[in-house]
Every structure is written in structure tokens, then in C-alpha cells.
Image 1 (cartoon, helix red, strand yellow):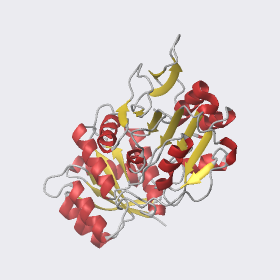
Image 2: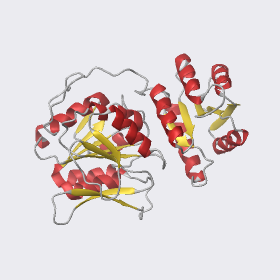
Image 3: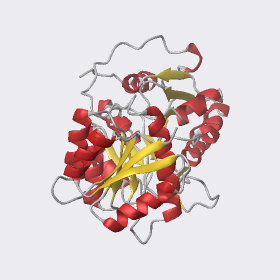
Image 4: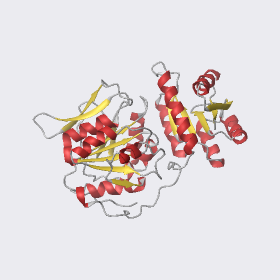
Length: 357
């Protein structure tokens, strides 16, 4: 069955560009285009598309307002098309909070690889056409936190040994992180390193947004930054993040490097998690969250080989159950948890008191 897509953008050039990316695929049909938010709302009601691509900034009714209106009427997956600017990133994150399922970089910047954007867009259209908005947790209110469903497995619970938390995520990650990181208390006793797949220009706004809503400190990683308790470091887009011990010191610092292995993702969960496992060994605590693909399997295998512990997000609360499923199928996940139970589990495993809000 063909996938029907509604393309929304105030630029005729951009509507044509995005339409060409999609119409080259045998299973995708651009069933309509819209020039602004008002037209998008009307056509969404008439055409009933399987997926909508939505420009972030448009005159009249903005993409943000259009997302709010469409989501109030029908659960159509909406992929935002965002300019690589601070304002574009912040608006995109607000759209994700309102129910948009994901975003791509607008393919009009000189430093955007058009082929990469097209491949990313086509993959996401196919995923969300199959899945719909099922499992999206961004637009719902904060959930009550029930007791952990079962005791933590006795094998790895050495709560005084975990010295670093490594978190990897992709599609659906900004919303997942916003429902996880702010739950961690200021007394969280272990440094955190995070890889979130996203284009350059988005990781700093993501870090700032999480920092404003969290009790711990959240920053975008920089060369030589030292890992600290109560701090989460987000790998900057476009660089691989690894950690290394400072010579002659007990401190561990961030090292940013170019991608010499031609990885599919930069930053990569595999690269980051393997590095954390190399430095911290059995003291590594990892979590793999929502996302497409298999990034994380190689890195988490090293975490397990070194004796670390891995938590995987469950299918029901993942926007896309790809990365967590790949890790679980490879036998690398010690505990599968819904998103709202991951923060309490991280606290329990690191011997940190978790205060329910």
C-alpha cells in the first residue's frame, strides 16, 4: 500500500525539493502540498495523509500552531522540517512537545548533505507511516511513577561501583530525554554522557532546554570537559565523543574527534559507549532509548564484555523501537523498562535517593 504524504512549506522551491525526495520512492506518493499552516490544517482534514512534513517557520499560522491544531483533530504523524538556527531548533523542540514525531534539517543550508537528508526523510516517512503516532509520549502530561515492576536482577547490583552513566538515543530522543533527565535529583551521584542523533546546531539548544528543566546540570560537550557528579554532557553533533583518563589524575575528561571510521551517525552511541566501557569497565551503567537502527549494539557489547549493566527502553514507550530492540535481541539488555521507570532505576543503581514529584 502506498504511503500518502502532505508536504507543507511556504517556499515553492522547498515544496518541490521535498516532493522530489519522496516521489522518487515507489511506495511514497505526495498526495498534496500546502503553503501555510491554515492550508495544512484544511488539507490534512480532506486528504487524510499518512504522514505530514511541516515547515517550522511560515507566515500566518506557523508550523507550531498547525501542529497543535492538526494533533487536536487527528493523530497524523508530523515530521518537522527545521532551519539550522537557534530559533528553528527551539521551535522544533516545542513542536515535538506538542506531538510532532520527529524532525529533519531543512535541505537549503550550504553545509547540509542533501542525499543524507533525503535518505533520513524517506526512512522516517516509512517508519511513521507504519507506526502512526502510537507510543509518542511528548504531548501527554507528566505520568505518575509507579513502583518498579520487579526487583533489580541480583547479578549486577553493585550500587557503589557505577561511576558513569552512558545514554544513547535517536528518533524520539529529545522527548524521551525531557521525560527522563529532569526527574534525576540534584544529588545524582554519577556523571552522565549522552549521545542524541541530530544535525549540527541542535545539540546545544537541546542541552540548554534540558538544563533549564533539570535539577542536574546539562551541557553540550567540549574538548577537555571533566566528568562531574550531577552533570550530564551531551555529545555535540558532527563530532565523535570519547572519554579518557587524565594522565596523573583520577579525573576523566571528554575528547572530541573527527569521525575516522565513516560511521553512519556522528556522534555515535557505539563510539561513546565503547569509550566509556574502556575507561570505567564494570563500573559502566548504560541506557539505550528510542531510536531507529542499530547504533549502540557494538558499544553496548563492550559494556557487557567489561561487566557493565544495560537498561533498555521498552517498545510501548519508544517512539521507534529500533535501537533498544536491536540491543535486546543481541542479548545485551539486563533490564527492559518503560521510560518513566528509567530515572528511578538509575537512581537505585547508583545509590541515589529518588524523590517522586
